[in-house]
Length: 135
Image (cartoon, rainbow, N blue to C red):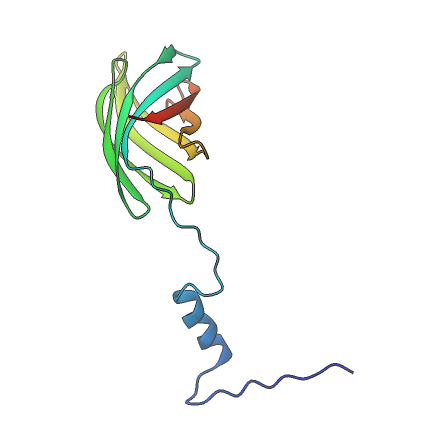
């Protein structure tokens, strides 16, 4: 028949509390470190609404948190916030276009060749794709 395994714990430590400690320490959880996306990026954006634009974004990274500044002829200047999870990158900002307030969101990934690529949303006013290269 099957083997029985006995786990002997002392000082009142239970299997459940040991599991909680292991999770808190990161043991048994396979989490990826955030990719390094800090720096100045030249973007090429293709949208349904406005054709191709070439904005730039400067990203400052603190662990998995992003802050920074976005600049374009179309949407102007804006501060960005976002996050990095493994190679996945998201950042967003509030902008105004033709009198309409919108939240612009970029969602993409750091590629093996060091570029960023993904999609962007103009908060219900259109979508697009983007690629980015570090300057």
